[in-house]
Length: 322
Length: 210
Image 1 (tube, rainbow over the protein chains, first blue to last red):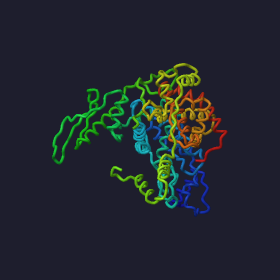
Image 2: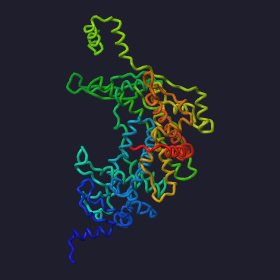
Image 3: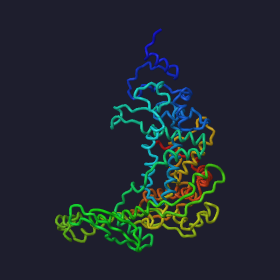
Image 4: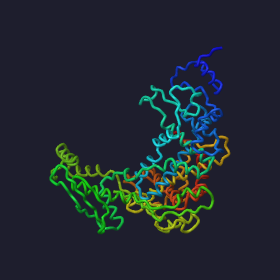
């Protein structure tokens, strides 16, 4: 019997998935077209995309394919909780937050909390995880794509256009981020703490993001004054070090700020006041982004028994409050 | 008035013109009460002996942390002395995640068919109410150095900020154990002292629908 391609696909979907055919066409547009199909994790775990993903990520042979398959089905997809990554991604989120934060706090102990938050987002935030997914070769399922074609892709649900005030809201970026976090959770569960930390270090913490580009201080001269007072250093003094073009359209003033006879910052701007502020800003910034050398991170003690941890000598007292 | 017309000076002028027949002292009195309806702020600070007693009771040993300055810093909130004294904000976030990790380890140790942790369970377990109940058992609220906002006469502890400050300080202590002693010590500490109490509180209190 000759079958059209579409009917063949439909029959295949019955075979691969425990699919109850939709007898009544749902007038409710909230349920996506592939919602009635339940993803069969065992079948997905055997597919080629999962196998190649596992090899690409250099996961151990003992890492179960079923966990990887489960990680790819987002919690937003309307199916049973045992088929989705809704119980995996919180583990990945906590690990990601923990390893990233301890790295930032160890590497930049004096960084203000706002800077820490921005740096954490820039190293391991949702946008980064989406880029990582592209790097891993993870695809997302198409708009009305069949679950057969979607095997080995990230399966998530879309919100219909009429349902929210903001219009068409897609879970895609969050779903992709959750997939990466679920893979990280799988690594923690099946390969241990060391492998999970290595995963985060290799893919997220190895990014180049210098912290001095991330912060802009309000009232820099006031902050510097407070900082000098706190450190027991003399009041900061501003000296004009170089200038050119005064009275012209584009003057340049280079001002250095000195405390206890040493220059602690230098700034350049087109007005005298502004260059003083710039100098103060640079001085405060150089205090905050100080990065001491460190031997071990705190989470290395979780790898195995008997690892000694040497805490850093520097104890940050907290950022300046004005 | 020095040439700048502020709303307060405008109000004064309005009062004088519209309430011409009233007693002048009444007008000024009503003006002053209108401005300072908020009361004063209270600064709380423990005695040094209370601090050392608290740490001895908690960690069962003297000098758990390497310095007295760190001991004091961990119990100092950012509101104390307007952040001029070293405060505990830097340890808070790490402490939160270390606690979440110990809860995750606890959950993974349960022999479930489906391995994993639900986000709602995690958030409910780390709720400020539950953590503050454990803090009360430790006697933490008496040893924190903090300052309330300007308060009116009758105000509950939530408005005064005690809940928030206790929560922050609890997490900061865990964070300090993590950063100064290592992750294993912190997770063991949470496992021993916090996780059983939090799980018990989680089962007893009604679930918060997020």
